Length: 417
Image (cartoon, rainbow, N blue to C red; front, top):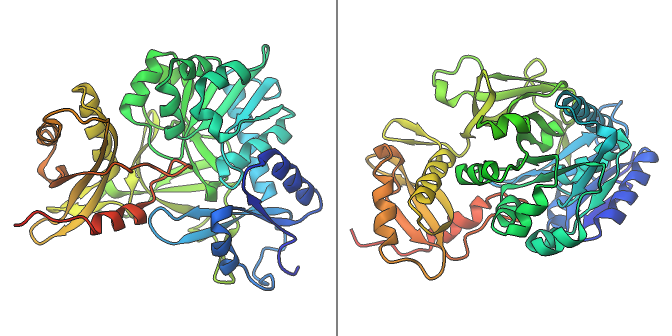
């Protein structure tokens, strides 16, 4: 096989693009789906000739971007057969919570180059369920959603959102009313903030926080909405096609890596013109996420590549962010967004710095009040600096572009002394 049959650029028309993708799969092709702004990165990774190391049984497949929030971009090769196994397992999970996949109606507001935007295509095909495409811009127009995109009566409506999209809908009464028509709202891609969870429960929204990645063919664990509404946190138990465990032999229990064994794991990665199989330990893939596993299922602690050592303690900035956001919401502080980054410190090793986007105009005394809230946390978790960052926001996929914000931090003036 020489090169790709197709490279599909996700630049708007998702429905037409999905039809072209399915035609390519029917023809047995391997297709790359890429965001318009990442075409150059993809071309640099592609081989001129397909490597002989590709699995002989690969079959039709898709190449999607993975990672990139904390370093380089990787291109993940997912066989269609693996994605179909994930869809089948999701269908079994739905049946276990009394939803019939064939009676469902899938709404898709996510781009096709994102695994959570691709999987509704595979699920709809696997279950024989209708798929309704939503332009991402519509999620910024809740009145339009309520008027033009209501779920079909007699169907069980499903949707996958990232927390940023959920937040926009929670902030508008029409957005809340629209979501109340859904039988299930998967939320993944980033942590669900405590205040988002509180507001969703208060509105009776049937959220299902879930966990997965491009490498796992989207979600491998999900929390049933009834459990969410009852106050359970975390991402629930593994789906039928997956097993979860914590890496053995780690001295630091807090930092144990989540490992996954699943029939939907990717074949491997393409980078610099070469193919590398997914690194496995007797079938187990190490995710890079620290986690705990308990009676209620999976609890994520944070990315290990984002964890810092401060004063001899392992600190997960994502967890500290959640606590600070919850404290800020409880005190009525006008924090719209918050990101914690690490800076080297000769005494502590590393300390956190808080980038904050406040509502405009900012309230008087808000910075002093934020610092006072932080004093409720252990010393190793307290930001040593608080910086106003008006443009602070996640990407369209709900991810933090950490390289961008670290560069922003580097050019900020430091207080003398």
